[in-house]
Image 1 (cartoon, helix red, strand yellow):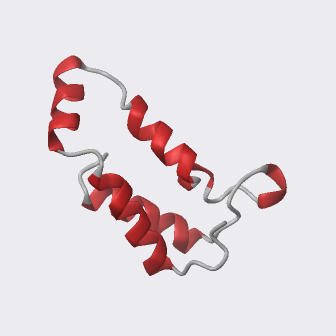
Image 2 (cartoon, rainbow, N blue to C red):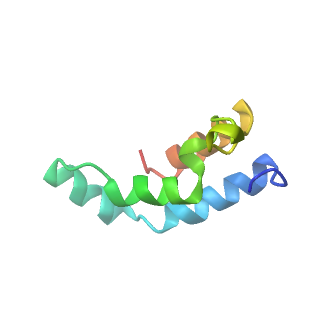
Length: 80
């Protein structure tokens, strides 16, 4: 799925995913002391939680730098 993506492509895709979860979403979760189920599900469905898992085990099989790009974009967007 991601083999033809470079890190900038991944950053852009993660950025767009994070835009679906604005500050209000995070503030409500914080106030309710709740887990970000919808956000984690979106990351999972998009394949970003399996970035470092080899493809033969159902993961994306990407590099450590690709995983870092995913985490950096999540952090940059405040989705942490």
